[in-house]
Amino acid sequence: MGIRFSLAAVVALVLAVFLGIKAAGLTYFFGVCVPYAAILAFVGGVVYKVLKWRRSPVPFRIATTAGQQKSLPWIKQDRLENPVTKKEVVGRMLLEVFLFRSLFRNTKFQMDQGPKLYYQWEKWLWLAGLLFHYAFFIILVRHLRFFTNSLPFFVEPLERLDGFLQVGLPGVYITDALFIVAVTYLFIRRIVIPQMRYMSLPADYFPLLLLLTIGVTGIMTRYFTKVDLLKVKQLAMSLVTFNPIVPEGIGVIFFIHLFLVSILLAYFPFSKLMHAGGVFLSPTRNQPNDSRIVRHINPWNYPVKVHTYAEYEDHFREKMVEAGLPVEKELPAEATTPQAGKE
Amino acid sequence: MKIYDGKYILIGLLVFVGVITFPIWFNLGKAAPPPEPKLDTPVIMQMAQKQCVLPREEMRTGHMQILNDWRTQVVRNGKRMYVAADGKTYEMSLQNECMRCHSNKTQFCDQCHTYAGLKLDSTPYCWTCHVPPKETK
Ligand code: HEM
Image (cartoon, rainbow over all chains, first blue to last red; front, side, top):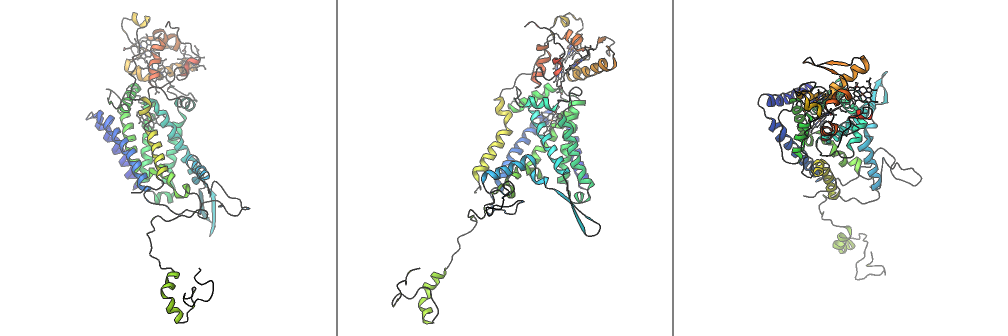
């Protein structure tokens, strides 16, 4: 169900641009209005989401992360898995963001031969996830050549490294292949593994299909149905210098690519893709485990009216003494002990 | 409304917006004009009918594919002559054919490639082996 819905959504989007450009000639709409709206939605949406998230306090530390917490001096602390200082927390966060440390712990578990449980390493998800994200990132950075007058210094080595196979012209980029392979794996994984399929929703299939289509249209643009890159660059530059013009005669395949990217951007902050921002705010990643070192006060505690025992006794001391109940502080008048009156 | 850890959140969001708007502040609002590759080489000036191997539009987007085909034909199949759609024959050679007409590499090929963000000598990397035509500046 979810697959069909997501597929239909992506096909409908592609058809919408195709007809919009071919039949209605809406190049300005799809070349200027939509990208601007999308980038606004993206930046605004991310900022809004982060601010909204951080309006909820997270006062208490999550102590049970995977690693020995700081304890007695002769017990070795796992400083990256269960950090106490800010530096260690940054280390853990870097591991998470750049290497997907948590995903690396992934295990698969199986029942075999009756009630026997087997746990095994399951690293394919981690591998495909990592490859996908790095390929995506490098592709994005390489795309900067459309958006800058002179190539920023870090793009050229990247282009060269990425294209070092020097196969065909325009040369094949390694990241293009990795991107498609990784996204395809991530998609197929959801279909083939029954549990994954059971718990996958349109919101899981849709981003994958969207990314796949973006990748495919990009690759088609580069290697097969060529478009005039100089005009594309002219359009891109006009967008970032706020002087939009749409040159005549850019192939429709480029508009499909651009429109799907716009959809992705606009969809990003309001979907699970927002994990990109969320990872920095995950309590199990960004909190030092210093529950036993620092006092954490719950910020939503309201002032509670308390009546301490000392106050209680002050109130009822005479009556208590009369009734023969023990009191901590004797009555002042006939006080006999020198300590009386001291707490 | 209180934002918890406001300092870190602010720094993070500023970095995010800074990175996203990179093309805007990197270009400082100026877009380089699209290139006009010069066709005024001696050979082309003498041509009665100024035309390339393929029609202009196809050349613009497809010249690297032609070069790729030519290279394969020459190096792998040993064929050196190319018959264009209009019956003209060309020698399949980068140096001896393309650059015979387009002898102004810096004013022609490089103009486009620099604009498109391909580095001059490295991509296309062809000129590390093939010899570009001599140009008088
Ligand atoms: C989420 C963002 C994007 C993704 C994942 C993406 C993906 C891709 C991929 C995989 C390719 C194949 C060639 C290569 O890797 O360079 C490509 C090519 C291309 N993309 Fe994108 N793209 C994105 C955004 C954009 C944007 C915003 C533009 C608007 C200028 C654009 C314009 C192009 C063009 C013109 C090509 C053809 C490049 C060539 O012929 O060398 N892309 N894209």
